[in-house]
Length: 317
Ligand code: CDV
Image 1: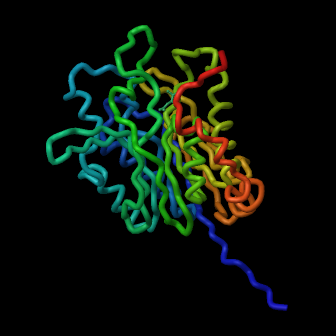
Image 2 (image 1 turned 180 degrees about the vertical axis):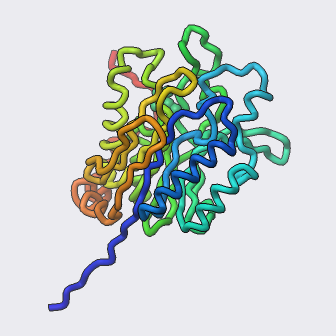
């Protein structure tokens, strides 16, 4: 009898957690930190390094800016640009791909500006193979001085239009950003495109001004949603924090690599610059996608109409 071994589809992934970035830190200082983590990950055999949301600056939506000059300094107009080119160059030299979150400012031909909370997937040759604009923008659009700190993502970004995936690193890769991870729709829309690994960068303050009673549960909720999203869609999830005390705001760490079983297979233990590393077998997705979450066999779309036809809840009278 012939033994027919399948070719394993391993991706050695590093969740490259960042500690705080000060408001005065330059792009050059931050990019140096990213390159250091990239090199460490490469030395440990990784081919894909995942950085957090808005990884090039401090988390600026915590402040209200009356002047757009001050605000504009936090956005990238080109990617790579002069300050981020060294990261692309070093990654290409090492043959390492990466995921990077940043604030993006684009201008249409007619002069209309667009601001997005963006994440890109860069392959081992330095090509951007997937670009994602954050869909679920949390917080508020107006200055709310009663808060200990602002969360003005609804003011500073426009929402993205959907969740795409790309074939890369031998599998099907997807991107989401921070608050997206709390919404089951995020994972399912990518699950329906056969996603096998979703990369999610985040900046999550421990304190939630509108619901301080959740503060003690912030780490539990972080893992709960990503583990559920992984299991329910038979996909790997790589969640990566910017963490620690940034400009007086305490943010959770807990960066983790989660298997399609929903189990955490690697996690960071500090709130500083740190790598969590795992050898991820993309074929571990198969048994979930072919059995309990075989969408073709078991989904009942006739019962799901409300998911896309209404936004708020309408309880019975
Ligand atoms: N950057 C984020 O999207 N943060 C939100 C906070 C505001 C709750 C999060 O979901 O973690």
